[in-house]
Image 1 (cartoon, rainbow, N blue to C red):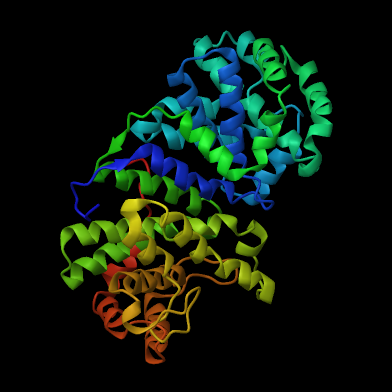
Image 2 (cartoon, helix red, strand yellow):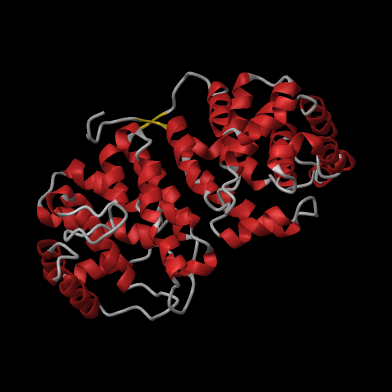
Length: 418
């Protein structure tokens, strides 16, 4: 696909790929989102629901935890098991607000909002839409089933099926709709119901088979909104990275304009800036927010994030260049960067531009180990890096000639609802 502003994008494909970012919160690489999507679709099949409803539940399962950015919070939700879920409501609300702000995801917003709401409470509150209530409750059931499987060895999961069923059954009519629990009991008699959970290729195949062939194309403008939505999740991971991706994207876009690049290239640079740090979701909160010096192991964890960004984005066919521009933002013209140690002409202008924007925005933003630096000090650091070949001299000079505007682009808070 050519890089034009009139390009369209397959929402289903983008969602399948970029939700890998959400699953990085799980330190055990459990693929929680895909497993929940699979489990809820299995229950939906057993309920005899329509293919359209099953597709909606697949994407509702993939995106149900869209309101969680913190690895610490994710682990708390996992550790809670079947305890009463009152403490989970903030991430449900955050996911609802984010999904509701993007028209193609609007129908999934209520599923995220109520995916930890007990069935008995929804019925007592006379939930106005019974159909939506049972769909969100189906995701809740699938979510807790997947959490319970984490307590048992993967290799012998079939030996523990009755235990898991026994833990779920008493909550029929309380946490979960009775008919959903019965559907789960029927579906889970098959060994394949459980064994597929730990075969990523089979999970992917089954989930894709349950998506209707009709595509949901996004316009370029919607693609930018989509990228912004996922950038919000990454930036919410820590108060120290709040608005980082948006600041980098704004500054990179501005620098592209000062260079005289064409409008379409500038638009793609902005998208690359928004998505450059999606691999950072794998970094534990305690590493990202550490006030002191990082250990060698912690530094290695941090350095992996650009590799993960590249690996995810390169799976999206129209993103071949964006994957490089975003994933190579820690490479250096001298060849001393990471993870690929690219140098010279192998490092494209757009990647070098995002690298400069990334460093400048980080330097003028608050961090756990220091206060924000002045724009002059940040420029001085970049100039020193350029002197030894660690940044592009011409791009650093370009930023310096537009220093005040660069600082404003990097630090002006984003109006996320816009």
